[in-house]
Image (cartoon, rainbow, N blue to C red):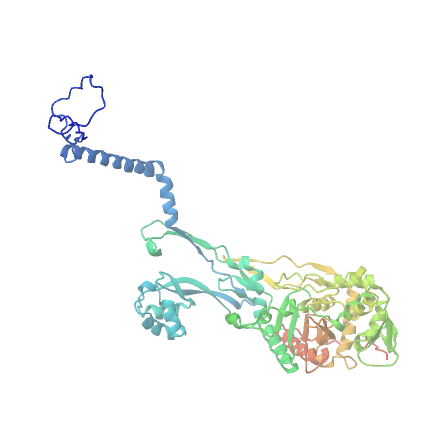
Length: 615
């Protein structure tokens, strides 16, 4: 049986209408005209293509941008204007220090030992040097620098670079005449040492920045340098100075010049004499000190090997120092002057007092000998000095004891600063009395177990020469201010060590050392009375922590009856020769002879004493 489908009702346009599922008896909703047609697209609320609307949008946007800029401009100019202008100026401003003209260092006669002269630094703007190789070829012969080295300095994009420093004005004039592009000059100064190595270890030297690094250049840096000035200017792009901008200059003040106590002629003779002896003796080094005992002024302070401060870079550290102040050594027999002076000053002996000197002496568990073997001797105190007897000196010192011996050593300046305030100066050393061992007393009595520098050793003899009054050594006689006026340093400190009577007796004993029976007849000067003392002390070596080699020395006074000068000579670690009289005596004789003549000191004409020595 077939079933026919019921046809669907058709709509207004004849299409088949889907069943709605509504109840049959319910009325259909009414549809308006056009129901079922596609709806047209909705239109925008405004058209972008409308010129009036677009102009309004642009105007509003422009207004907003201008408002932001305006607000920022108000902030920068009205609110933060002064602050920002100040910061910008700070970025452009540059302050450059202007070095002061350094004071001169002069000898006692006013002759220059160190001067500051005008100089130029050669600078370059690498961006303006179009052909570095060609420029270097022309500069090389003038500067004495290889062209390839100069070409490397001139190549690049740096706006400022140093090519050479410290040129003389004449050298810069030769360079300027070439009219080479990109080269400029900077005004500066350079330190010059006209005397070369003469007194170089006293004068010292300066570094590349012009500041003192050694000697008096370092010790009196503040006075010599003077207050620096300043130059403030505005700098534009590339580092160029803005010529129309404001600038200010504070002038530098010249430094103070220093007149030393050094006599350049005596210094020259001293350097030549000690250099010759050091060379012949194949010694490590040597020094000479020449002193006026009444004023404490040092007339010569020679140290060899030395150096040329004009070429300081080629010198070793050791040669740039002053060994007469920086190196310490055991004084050896020259120290017997302190011991025997103390014994006489304490009234325990006179130059005529006889002391039995055995061949050996046992003290503190050690056995002591004299330098030359002998049997028992009966020596006077003068004979003990003349023969340089260790045993006799020990026996004499026991008459005053260790505590008093220590007190006198300190009054003579042992272990104390010299007062020179020299860079690197060593104070020497003597152990405190409460630290002495059983052998300290005998060894210190004849010059071992304590240490001194050469100036301290000379000062001991200067004290005896000055009637027992120690005058603190000095190296500066006056200061010359920039306006030409002078100032004298404060008077040196003085200390009464022994009485004038004691000093006179000791000087007479020292004359016996230079006499026929003494240890240094080669130190005698015809026509003058001379007193002195030899010393041959064992040398302590830091490398092995033991005694190795010797320090040979001789220190003398002339004229012995009216002392005017003291000369101290020391030779460190000689390999040809050993004794102080043998090595130091001839140096003393040469230097003292010249110094007496240079200072026009006449012979007194008096006869030397003839003290008994015993035997």
